[in-house]
Every structure is written in C-alpha cells, then in structure tokens.
Image (tube, rainbow over all chains, first blue to last red; front, side, top):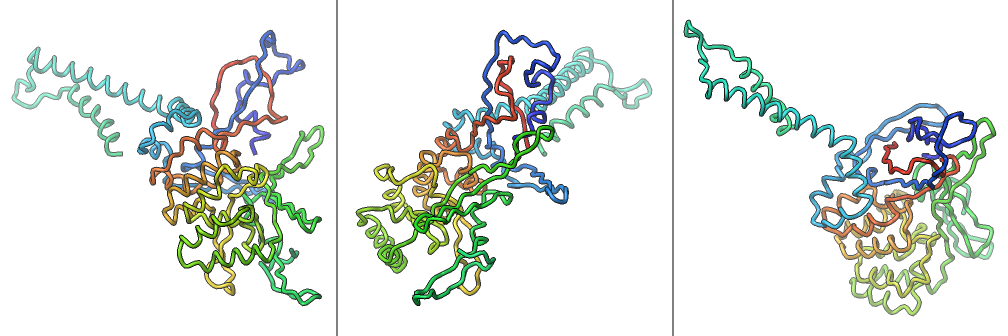
Length: 161
Length: 255
C-alpha cells in the first residue's frame, strides 16, 4: 500500500530522489544509504481508515479501534521499561513534535500572558492604589480585570475538556 | 478441497470411505486483510500449502505495470493419521485439565500438535490448547525449536464452530484471544515469547489489533513485543530511493 506513496510521505523538494536529469544541484560528495522503518504502533490505537474501492472508485472512511488511546494505555501501565523501546520512543517523539509541542506552547503563552496581566492588575490596584470607583461612586470599569477574566477561560476549558 | 462455496460437505468415495470436502472459500478467514489473495498449492497429496498473499503493482504507468504477489504467511495442511485423530479425540473427552496436560506431556514427539489440518478447520492443536498455560509451556518450549518454522507460523486466526454443526456458524479468534478469555496470562506471555522468537514479522501484528488494550490492562509484559519486528517493519522498496545526501532522521505520518 505504501509502495507508490513516496511523494505523499515526503512531499518536500529536498527529498526528491537523486537523479542526474533532475536539473537540480545536489552535493553528491556524501551520499547516505536510507533505512525506512514503518512503526505500526499507532494502528493499535484509534485511527481513521480510508479505503477506496478499486472497481467503483468509491471511498469509505471508518474509525478503527474507536476509543483506544495507545499512549494513555502505556502511561497507565506499570511496565516502565516499555518507554525504553525504540518504537514507543518514536511514537512519543512524533506526537510531541506534531501535536504536543504546539498545543503546550499555546497553553504556556496563554499562562504567561495571564500572569503578566495579573501582575499589572495587582500593581495598579493594590500597590499604586488606584481607585476602583468613579468620582460619582459608580464602579469603575478596569480593562485589566476583563482581560483577567478572559485569561482564565483557557485553563478552565483545558481542565474540563 | 472443492470449488463450491459450501463450507464443508460429507461424501463417500469409491471405496466406501467417508470423506469431507472443504471449499476454497471456507479458508477466507486466513486473510489478514480482505484484499488478500489465497494461493492453494495442493499438487502433492502429502503437502498442501495455503499461501496468504497481497497483490501489488510493480513499475510505473509509463514503462508498464506488472502485477506481483507478496507472500504474507503460509499454512501447511497435513493429512492426519488415525493414531493422531484418536489422540485429538482423547483430548476432547478429557474431563479435567490435568488429564489434558498428562496426554500432552506423555507424547514422545509433539510434532502432531504443530500440524495444521482441515479436521480442525485449518488450525494446529497447539493453538486450540491455548486455554491451558501448562500445555503451552511444554509445547512452545525451545527444546522443540526444530519443529518451529518462520515460514509456517503456528499462530494465526482460527475458525471456531459456534453452536451445532447444522447451524454452520463460526467465529474467528486467535490463540491469544482464547487465552485471554480464559484469563491465562502465563499462556499469553508464552505465546507472545514464541511470536517474538519465531513469528517475528510485521504480519503477526494483526494478532494484536484488538487485544492490545486487554494485554496492557492485565499487566502482561509487552516490552519484548514492542522491541521486536512485529510493530516495526523495516522495508526496502524499488519505488523508494535507497540513497540520499540528507543524513537526518525524519518521522512522517502515513494513513
């Protein structure tokens, strides 16, 4: 199945197969033998399976192993040594690089922004002692307090999701 | 074996001997994927081999594509002797597990347990006995390594009759599934050790497609399995370049 999908897996120009008639300049002084490995651990967890009928050309999509989270199973296991295996390390690295890193970076940035706003708000209201009421006695609208409220939405959604 | 789609049919040959004709379609359960093909090599009366194959196209459209078949695994069907049939029959009439273990351990040559036969719907007896840890421990011991073959694996999906013969209903389960259902954790560990040693091929990964969460929940050690080639297939295809100037390691998704 993977046989004719080299260009799908490696679509970038830099991974184009080396050939003399490609017209592109490549440093051929050091050429390395490629080792391809197919890690099949993700197929044990839930994934989307797309299948095209060779006769009708009709494509069907179905979920396989619905509800199975392979990394959660590994994390809950008492067998810590499984994390020494290359296949699991590859899976964790792949998930971190493609999903985890961006997701947690966004969470980290939201958290830092929230802390900065909290510091500014604390400084403004409690250290500089700015009044929280207008001259006519009505409550003063502080934009930082609204930002603080917005900033707490993400951690709350993260906890409850 | 017959060409009809009827699962199996009892007939009497010209000598008056009872025979059972199995259809080619009745072996479809051996396929790992529904797109697989089965190749029946039954020219030799004493050696019938069923090969489970995957078709693929080699070459490109410009220079012409050629259809090829890739062998995934083979099942060798044996003719069972009367003595062996009596042995199997005695296993089925045993009332306790100890009696089964005694019969298994008493065999001077355990090769009969590794034989796949149509009388057992294409399964080897060792696979059927997976509900018992002690039998597994004896039969899958390394002392019998001479009977184990990389080409002809012992563990694959088995066809098991559901209810009465007349119902013609079957369910399909591997030895690991049977052992897990019987809560035989040690038997599962022994089978997995065997797979890592003698069926160390990515084709064996289909045996764990459904039951891997159960293995983890029951605390069965899977480190050796994860380190093996069962879930890590190294390939070298003609259509993929074999050399490049980029020495870095890259991880890519493919579905």
